[in-house]
Length: 67
Image 1 (tube, rainbow, N blue to C red):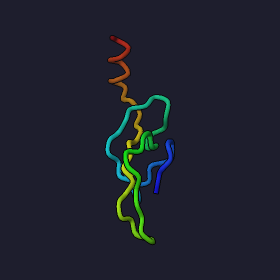
Image 2: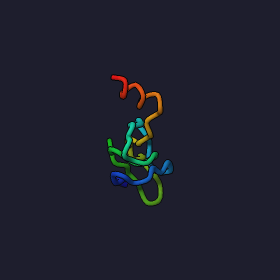
Image 3: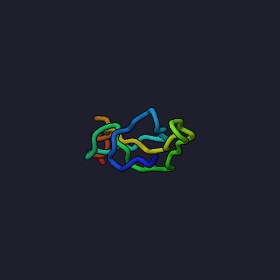
């Protein structure tokens, strides 16, 4: 179980370690894979651990423009 970059986050077999703010990506896309997941037959032994994208908030965009 190895998720691909820019794949939609699926909570049934992925575990989000952290979120990363991205202006150029949609929300809830895999940005980085920390560790791949493992499956035995139809049972998940360990979910894939990934970093997930999120949109920047308006406040953070304004602060960067002022700097």
